[in-house]
Image 1 (spheres, helix red, strand yellow):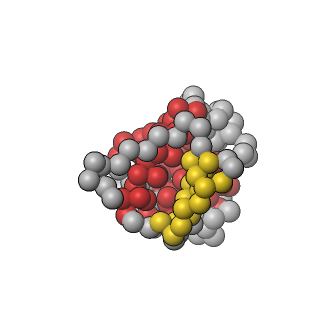
Image 2 (cartoon, rainbow, N blue to C red):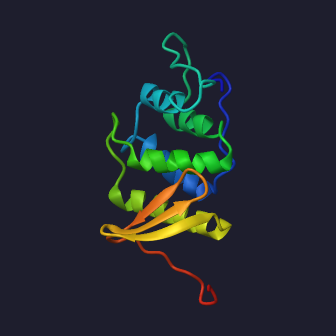
Length: 152
């Protein structure tokens, strides 16, 4: 990963990537450039530190996309789940709950469509879906999932 030539993330659907950019790297919500790089550096040692001395630094949304693009799609999904559960610093504020819910629903639908469920358990807090990768879903409250009529 190089901030001198940041890359767009082409692995996620464009509408999902745009929503993630708005949630984590916009003027209304999200992390600062150093916070974005710190988050991703904790997950990958090839991500550069923040370039404090560089004359030109890419926009935060492009830094965010470039960092996410460093991972394969399954790992991106797990990172996105970590992002929506992130309790660390967010200089520009936390994402709106409605946007977090939209991303959770996309993740759930995307993973269910891929057939990667390991097990499903009913807990006192709702439904726990454990997947074969790094993602777990806790369905409770207002989470809404629709299945095709012929699903079975």
